[in-house]
Image 1 (spheres, rainbow, N blue to C red):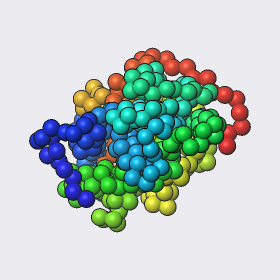
Image 2 (image 1 turned 180 degrees about the vertical axis):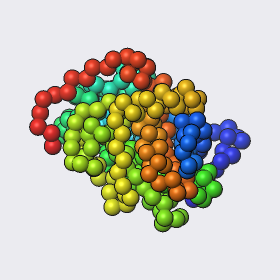
Image 3 (image 1 turned 135 degrees about the vertical axis):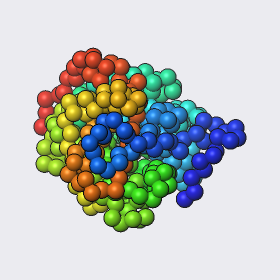
Length: 328
Ligand SMILES: Cc1ncc(COP(=O)(O)O)c(C=O)c1O
């Protein structure tokens, strides 16, 4: 797959053509004393500001090509924020109406940006680890007009994985000069880890793949569920799109470790990123300490810190009411 690195030489046909081709940046100061070089794929360079641009553009285009998504239909998706924003962005570019179902505990910035792209929002109780409730609500809405809605379904749509396999993976491989010791990524839908991982492993089967999850919601590591403060990951279930058979291991990071690292990335590297990026880098450094022999470690900067002004990342106490219930 050829990456069109010089696409900006000419005018683009629409903002959708600016999706992808994000920088890969070496970390220099938070990695002091660490042997393997650690690289960050800076996904907030995309038009809607997160790693989700790629998958929504591809999921919409594939659905249009198959005839599943037709003019006049309404797009309906469940998201904790970045996916909803990217979905609303692509819907806006392509002229579809859009409804996003999300837990009410997500940051105000996410809600406002989604609305700015013209989407309607439906809220369900709880926070990041209560996405299953949003999925139930989505199914109820869809049942009201099955032919009128198209649901991208990021958690189990294989086009999510394929988008990363076709774009993020090849970009990383080229940018890293064909030397990747390990790829480390926290998972929401699992699309990034599975798609990038599959591509890198096909190039070099020695590439090690690590899932990262919140210590407070260590489903993969310990089958334990609990609320946490890392928006976008650890949604409280293991998604279809996460291929656990590919994994070399699982690394957990606490919400506090993730916040601390996200702050350090801004202050010491000039990279103001969201909390899940702090989580990824904290995990990458744990791996580096355990495996100093690795040739390099690549991880993802999933979104910008500017999406978190009203959260603990920027010193605001965010209270999320988590419903009392037996968790699935
Ligand atoms: C902030 C953030 N980080 C990480 C992820 C994880 O990406 P993926 O869904 O590809 O596993 C997401 C996904 O929603 C996200 O919003």
